[in-house]
Length: 555
Image (cartoon, rainbow, N blue to C red; front, side, top):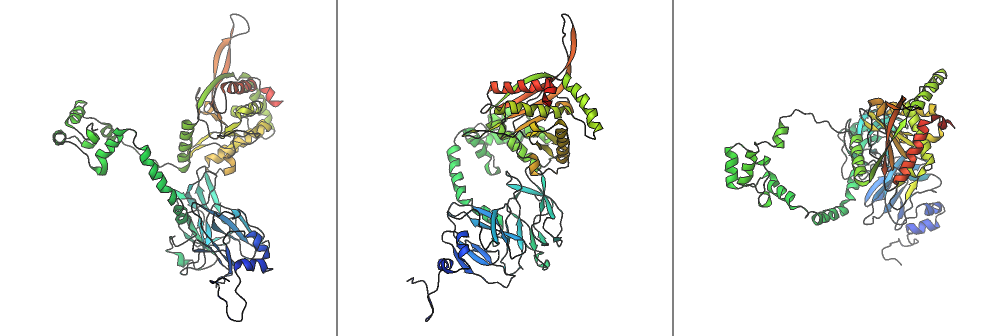
């Protein structure tokens, strides 16, 4: 017998949750769906509308019907999953710990409970001071998104919201995306207002209620006591790893000693200098902060002041101080673009291949096709559309260039999805034309124009720019750039840089005769881990063949 289990006299011994699961017909189907180690099940009653709570690590979260207790294991992180309840209005989302033997998806609770991972942290509050409500967290709207900005709120506090209606516009690392409401209710409190920056994924941005009591949330602020709030838990999980990072820093630090000396000489806004150096600097109105010390631990010596005066007493700091300037805050997409391009140049071994292609026949074919396009109600075909088609067909002929480096292997794609670089006032976008090798020139031209317009309107959706396998960047037609080298867009292994067409004098068919020809410079940036030089040259040979004999693209 279990000494910790107490039963009343004359009654059968109390049954554990495990026994209930084994013997109860009603809960028999639940046993398979909730296969969690050390998990107990108990009935929970509430004055709310049939709500109940999920309890994790001592914190309750209401989802309706039963209380689950789970135990955290060290080193495991939190995940979120969405729970749809057949007998409740809409759906809610709760969190769970990653436990060995906890299934990633839960099904089978009389067909009414289904779970799947979602990015936003949403849950019912069990606070006694506030009515039942939901905290909605910053969702993860792209695979690489770790934080986002609130561009603007479409709904205002007190507005009624319905499933499918847009709550706000979120600026992700790729574009501005509309965030839709999943349940019916009222927007009780906007926690992160218009223009809020660098909101971590899962951090509470607003609160909704099913009905009334909106005034009670006037001064509402998320706190550590609110278990559903993602920041408190997501920040709590990395803490064990933090000391490890700090322990590694001293091991890496002792490389150059000069920079350490400079830091030491200016630590705490205090500058170390000899008395003679201070006296000489004071007599000549020299700020010690503008002088680099060469003494022990970066100490400023008399000789340093004399050298500074001998050079005219000018420094970069003083030269810059007289300039007028404006600090322009970086949009989220510019930050991400900067980080990705920096990582590309630092981690990808670039090399470049350039070829000149004669485009007289290409221009002639475009002139013949555009009247047909206009007659059929279509839009004109541009040189860039023909370039995209030629690149797609060349990739189909040389599939080694349609690949990505995956460390342990090279992934070769069967789809030819061409990203097209589009510069806008919001930053650089690269929307994708999917299966460009299988589409006609008119279809490609139509898609490129639509995607470019969405990019300029900052209304691209994730499916408009994700999944590309190769990129084309054209600075020739719009800007007249003769030739340039583009940076590879990871995880792709190549990018094609298109320059402008120019007329050149070339030898004619007969001796002593000359003629004019239009030539376009094309430079391919390649990842040498994936594309060897000969493979890159083979691609450019195929590309040049399609450009110089464009009718072959129609075969």
